[in-house]
Length: 53
Image 1 (spheres, one colour):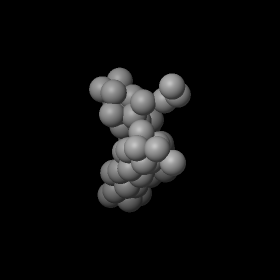
Image 2 (tube, rainbow, N blue to C red; image 1 turned 90 degrees about the vertical axis):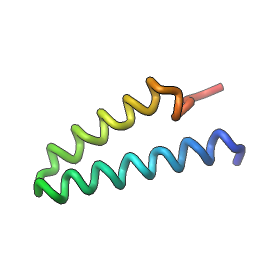
Image 3 (cartoon, rainbow, N blue to C red; image 1 turned 180 degrees about the horizontal axis):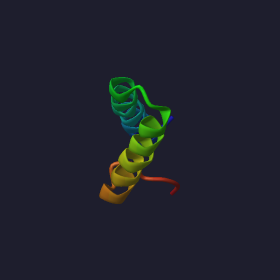
């Protein structure tokens, strides 16, 4: 597992944790999934998560 894979995994785990907090605070699965998609999308757009080679 290379450095990029480890960073991608860490950012994905962080996105899941933050989305989980939003979902838990609102007690809504819909908020969880929306927050997860938005956070992952922002991370990919910012270059924090780099898919593929």
